[in-house]
Image (tube, protein in one colour):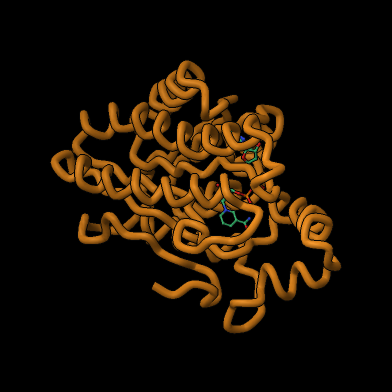
Length: 258
Ligand code: NAD
């Protein structure tokens, strides 16, 4: 699977899964725009990948329309096209619903759903004009399954699937496809933070959170790795036709099977 100079905007790519996808895309001959709230970390990630012909960094809050537009325009100006969007930026906040602050609910919904909407809108302007593109959304097993304490996250991740399916239909006329990747638990800073929080909220040890809550339903009690998710993203980005569209691909060691 090769990207042959294709340009990808990857949100939340200063850390974790997005960072791994950016590295994998560059290895496969792509050019990447690392768009992240944390500009310093985005710059460091871009510098690690290559010079500005291969990787650039933009500061972007995906929930801010002006920042999204400016960041996508900057990537198009630097590289001359936008071929791939990986809408990946995300956060996690866990609480039982009766204690869930409305502000935290709004924050999760906004970063995941407003972020996916705004980045899609900004990127399809370029994709529709050039009559090609691949939209890739970072869903989760929680796009298909529910877990206690995660009302906002599960609602947001189910919403991502809906947006991706609409984009598969709207994008088809413009040769743009849309798919969702649904990982199980991947050991990134987002998950590391959840272990003590869930242990506290569920009243169990951190070891039990990992073994029972996070990996209990997998077929082999293994974490999904960043590299696994990056490989699926590369397949979706480089796929030669639009046969693969409107799909959600679950990469979770069998935690959820479609
Ligand atoms: P991470 O915390 O390692 O990285 C998230 C990145 O997003 C950070 O660099 C952060 O600065 C950035 N970010 C946060 N808010 C932002 C905003 N408003 N605008 C722009 N950037 C912002 O997290 P991760 O585990 O790599 O998660 C990436 C995506 O994968 C998320 O959408 C997450 O829901 C999803 N996911 C993660 C797992 C997992 O187990 N780690 C599983 C399934 C899905």
